[in-house]
Image (tube, rainbow, N blue to C red; front, side):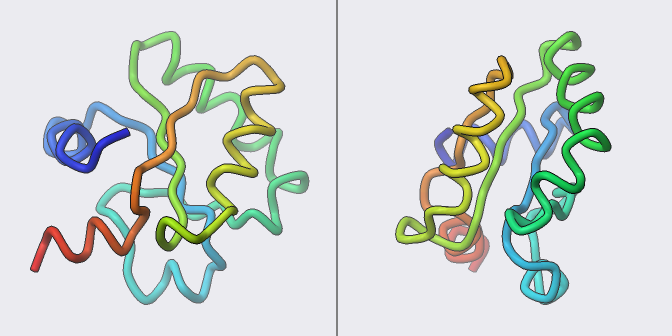
Length: 104
């Protein structure tokens, strides 16, 4: 997903966003409304989040995953795992770094 598209969805509260960076990093700053779901907790927290993902999809709310930047593989790893379970998810291009730079 492109940054501009996500920004518009965030403004309308029309997106479900997961931040897959470690909780400590999430605590230092994150996209407004993003839910912390570190990649390391993927299996442990899957049942907790899967219902929300299904509900968002049913409501035509996009589900977006992001991590730190273009070099970070965590968003792709989580998105692939969710896609294998039948979920339609997107990855924020450029991750949190792109969001932060755009806000400056």
